[in-house]
Image (cartoon, rainbow, N blue to C red; front, side, top):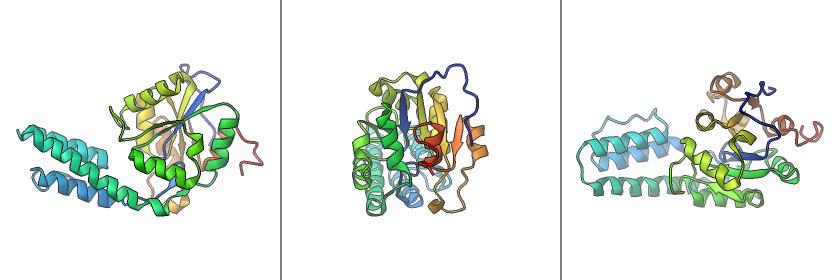
Length: 247
């Protein structure tokens, strides 16, 4: 799907491209349901009443709700610190279990190489932990393309906070009006739109299954400037590979 007309605060040419990791550049098939279950168990061990947290919420919303419940309960500060430490340790461990089955998404390496050859600055903004993100990049051969990486392990707000993307772009020394963020989830769109950074969506890989709720219409409604069915199509939209090479 071709890009829509750029809004006035987006300038050309692009100077930098920031990417989401899982689903966008690599395929890991994390057990997100198990992560949600385990975060809720940790929260309940820290005093959150059973039934207050829903498995239907994304993980970051469950964590936010857990913090609010613990804070509003009047529990000592140590309880919140224990929750933070335990849930991080738990989801980090589950996440690393996916590393042996993590593969590059088709077209990732040619796209990143073409961007690098054209002089683009490339960064990574992910909700994965730093150890997983770096290990996944090394395993898939994509690590050499990323001099800038911001994960949920970094100090400060994590994605989808717009501050996480703005912090990364400052490190990359790329103005927000000459940057694009690429992702495969509405969470990525939320982050980019709130940061006033243009967003290019990539539809989920077919291996993610037919039940994915991510569609071109949903991405466009969420503020995407363009939607690609895969990374080769994204390469054509960014005008970094000839059409024949990007098939």
